[in-house]
Amino acid sequence: MMQRLAQRTGIATLSLLLLALAGCGAVPATHLSTAATAGLDLQGRVHGGSQSVSGAHIYLFAAGSTGYGGASVSLLNPTFPGVATDSLGSYVTTDASGNFSITSAYHCTPGDEIYLLAAGGNPGLAPGVTNPALRLMSALGPCPTAGTLAGVLPLINISEVTTVGAVYALASFMTDATHLSSGGSALAYTGLQNAFNNVQMLVDPVSGAAQSFTFNAVPPAKTINTLANLIASCVNSTGNSPTCNTLFTNAKAPDGTVPTDTVTALINIAHNPGANVAALFALANANPPYQPSLPAAPNDWTIAVTFYSDSMAGPYYPAIDNAGNLWVPSFPANALYEYNPLGVPISGAAGFLGNLNQPYAVAIDGTQAAWVVNYSYGATSASASHFSASGATLGTTSCAPNCVAVAIDGNQNIWTAGSTGVTAVYNSGSPLGQFSVTAGASGLAIDSKGNGWMVGLNHALYKLTLPNSVTAYSQSISAVSGDLNNLAIDANDNVWFTSGKGNSIGRVDSTGKLVSPSTGYTGGGLNFPAQIAVDGANRIWVANRDGKSISAFNNDGTAFSPATGFIPSGQDPLDPTVAGYTGLQSPHGLAIDGSGNIWVTNFTANSITVFYGLAAPVVTPLSPHSYGQRP
Image (tube, rainbow, N blue to C red; front, side, top):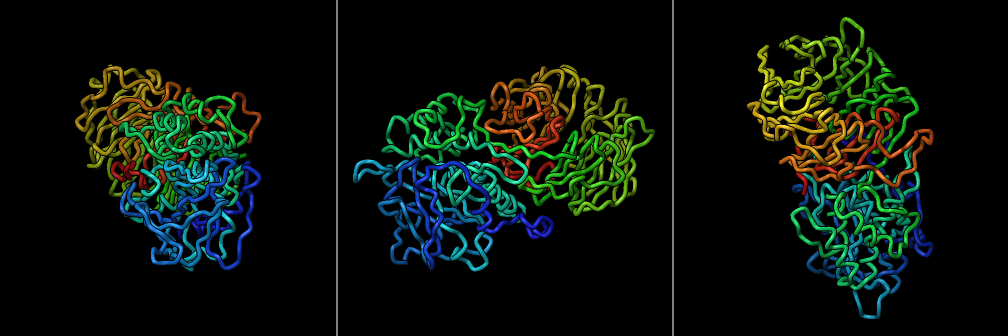
């Protein structure tokens, strides 16, 4: 899978040297050395804030593939001189200046994703005092073909900033510093590889600083530095200090478990970024070593980056293929755009063109080809345009006028629906079934049994069974406020739908019985909810068109996003003409990738925003039961 992506983009699996040269930001000047000694595989320095950390244990791990949140693999050879072993694994130790070096005491399997972990040590305290709560890490990326890092990387600075970048990009695969693993399938591991590549979008592993600019986006350096300052207050202490206690108390796991080290605390913050924001910001604001930082507490602790395009206009409902590429229909531009997992456009400046007329939504089939439905306002007929995995035009399939929805079932049947009340199903271009309902569609999804579910413009819900059976459930959901917009199906075949006017989401079970309250589930920042999606932990995510945010719900309908939803912070817009910029502008669509990132389309800002590590991975192409599992 990654070979295909690399051939098309040239950068999907970046070399470690490119990771090192990707950019730099602000970090204490005494720690910006990049000099390396010839002959040594890997050299580095550990610092907490402006203090070197002496006596820290340095571990070299490979991420696992035994299940999400499974154990990492220790790579250092415990029999090699200078290598010791403890309960975490084999390690070397930093000297009085925080420096370490690893020679030939290890071998990594080419392609394995590797990272460094620093644990314990003395961060400038009294002689003989150590901090058992100190955990810092740096994600290095794929093991080279030679199986060692010799001659690949200059000196690595491990800092709070590199820890923030690594944890947020990899949060969907982690439970603590020594448990970082994907699922066992090739597609699941592709998600892990993409997540390691995403680290470079946030931090520079060599300087140990937040990135100031990457590709066509400005990373949220202020938010990254503020999170780094937040854990620095604990790193530069004895570990049982008031600052550590405050950090751990306000960074509990969702099940209430209190962390005991800084990496686990940061993982918990990444998993639940709306919790205890003010209390955590107070820690970051006490004595911040990393600048620039946020001047006030953010709405939440999400980390997001927005990618702009000069030519993409009105991006609508997106989809993700099995390499992690994002496909986005550009409604007024009559184009289809494709972005690689790093947010780099790979469809050309004008996007893919051909037989498009107000493209509205896209779905990806088993060959990684894209199917795009054309709204075609005012036309007497519409179509679904077919593009190959490389973006070549393959033809069209008939679709009802004002076509707004497309879905693909497990048998690779193409389902399309328009606002005139006709849903058509095709297989290899041949008609397979057709359904007529009293009102047109505004959403379409397929359950695990191959049934189609459609939201109608009359605020009703329909179950569609091939070849032409229609079951209406208008009565069961009539109490949920109108203007139903979109729907998604979870791992238990529950059907979730959004109510724009009601600012709520509803749920029916596989029999059409209403499960949610009569008024739907509310809260969590819902404000004219548009597209809805389900992640690998069976949680629900919603783009809020008018709220300029995204909302999140557990599968029982309880919201865990803030009252305003999740809103990006700490970004400087590339387009200063966008008035009232908040990171999201009229977000219509969203999609979840195999790295646990949530991609959101900003309809009025010609851009897409990615929230890193916020969801549980979804193995693509999207289907009702292609899920990962949040650790």
